[in-house]
Amino acid sequence: MKKVLIVEDDLIIALSTEKMIEQIGYQVVGRVTTGEEAVEMAFSTHPDVILMDIRLAGEMDGIEAASQILNGNSNPTLIYVTGNTDQIYKDRAKETGYKAFLTKPVQMQELKKTIG
Image (tube, rainbow, N blue to C red; front, top):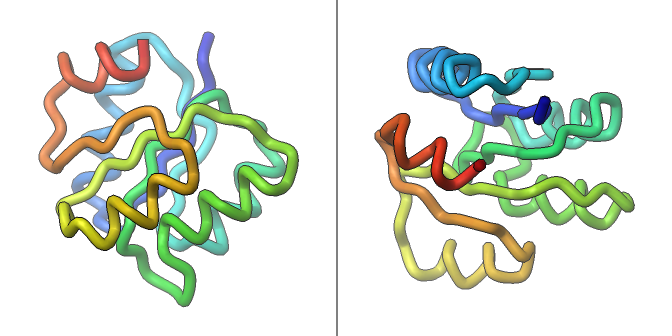
C-alpha cells in the first residue's frame, strides 16, 4: 500500500484530499500545513507520494520544502496540487523533478490516475 503525505494549509482541501486518498486505497501518513512540517514529516514517515501545495503557511513554500526533502536522500513521487499556475512557480518546480502539476480543485479520477 502506498503511503501518502498531504501538505496543504487549507483544512477543507486537506480533509477532502485525505478522503480521496483513502478511497483510492492508499494510506495517509500525515497531513501538515507548513513546509517546515513537511520536511520533518517526510523524513520521519518516508512517504511514497507527496501531494504538495506550493503556497503554504510558514516561512517555506512547497517548492523549497520539496527541494529539502529530495536533497535529504528521500525519493518520493512528488505531485504539486495548487491553485497557483503562475509560470514562475512552474519554472521553479521543474528543478524538483515532479511527476505532475495538478490544479485545485482536484478530482478523484485525476488523482487516482496520477498517483496510480
